[in-house]
Length: 190
Image 1: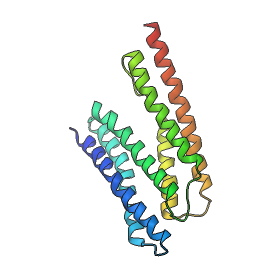
Image 2: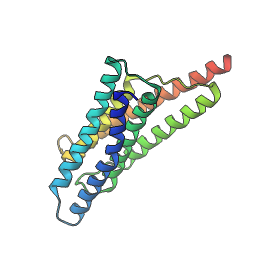
Image 3: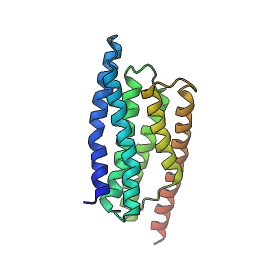
Image 4: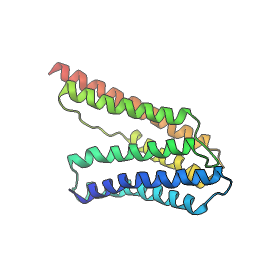
């Protein structure tokens, strides 16, 4: 197992730690006694996990540590981290919350992407992951939107980073859908 993949696994292990801190902080806010230590711990855990995404990608590319396992685990770790953070911050009391359409959009895009990969793999025999810059921007903007709530930034309002993340989530989902349909068409012509 490569070092880059070990970092990805570390990121996956940080997810329940972040969720725990975030939920306990939300409960402390709801009880009227916000525990700043829990908030800082949640922010730090999420930030470390987010930074590890860039670090494992850099190591995999620059030290030739790309692997099939890493290619599967890395996007899975990103999706799990972001989904858990978006859902947790949508339904706990952190002072600000995502509008309901945002977690629904992210869940829908990710479910369609994952289901599409399985369908393409079944029909075409192999599924080739073609990353697109809009997917990377979507991930980065979702991370920014999560930190917007976590840090409690108010200017500009939360709707702006959320809408921008939502736009790139939609565009990247459409691009991945078109790529998947092309893979199915190519398989039908072989």
